Image 1 (tube, rainbow, N blue to C red):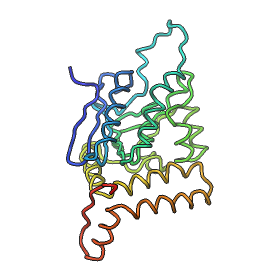
Image 2 (tube, one colour; image 1 turned 90 degrees about the horizontal axis):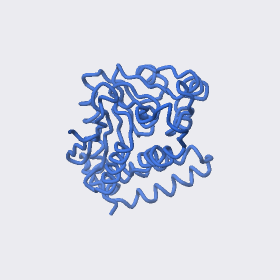
Image 3 (cartoon, rainbow, N blue to C red; image 1 turned 60 degrees about the vertical axis):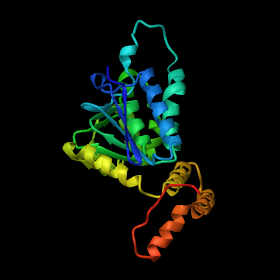
Image 4 (tube, rainbow, N blue to C red; image 1 turned 180 degrees about the vertical axis):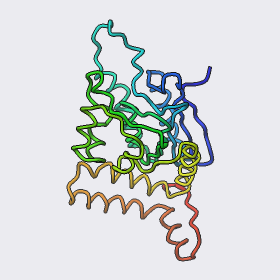
Amino acid sequence: MEPILLVDRHEGWTALTLNRPDRLNSFNEDLHRALADALDAAGQDEGVRAVLLTGAGRGFCAGQDLSDRSPSDAPRDLGATIEAFYNPLVRRIRALRKPVVCAVNGVAAGAGANIALACDIVLAARSAKFIQAFAKIGLVPDSGGTYFLPRLIGDARARALALLAEPVPAETAESWGMIWKVVDDAALQDEARALTARLATQPTQGLALTKAAFNASGGNDLNAQLDLERDLQRQAGLTPDYAEGVKAFMEKRAPHFTGRSS
């Protein structure tokens, strides 16, 4: 039996593939635990400087596996599931001190759509769709959906998507600024892997600090953000990759970044 999460290690980066294609890679507790462990391992491994997240089969992720739940079950505390699994997953992705690329290879629904939006750069196959499916079963968008969507596409569109649960085709998602780029289906994985490999050669500490700046910007006013940029730039200026970048520029050659903090 294949593992529910495929971990494919490359030079400088790791691909994590949700591998429950018969369930459109929907989450159960085992998949949550496997992905959490893999992200933690990538974060602790200095040899991993970028992460690619994608799905096996015809979909990226359909969110929560509802087959684990029966209408005849006693009422359950869905907030406990979010607190135990979905919120920590989104926080791991955002806090990871390495860029996370998401390749959405098909439908991304419910929490699956919002987990994709939590990543740093999102590529989507032309046939992919993003669906805030929560309203169809009487639930509220979670996994950061009510945070990411208004900031990415504006309040009017975000509210309509959440209330109507209508699918957003990949090309529309790109034109609205919800994702970075649409790629032909056959080219998606190759382009996503090439992009992740490229990020793995960049100044990892500087990219981590850039992530930190964007993560904080939504809650900061301009003065606070200017102060944060100053503090983060101070840290970036002390890294070996900054010294290498300046030296390479002066010597008119390509830089060789190591990604190390010291």
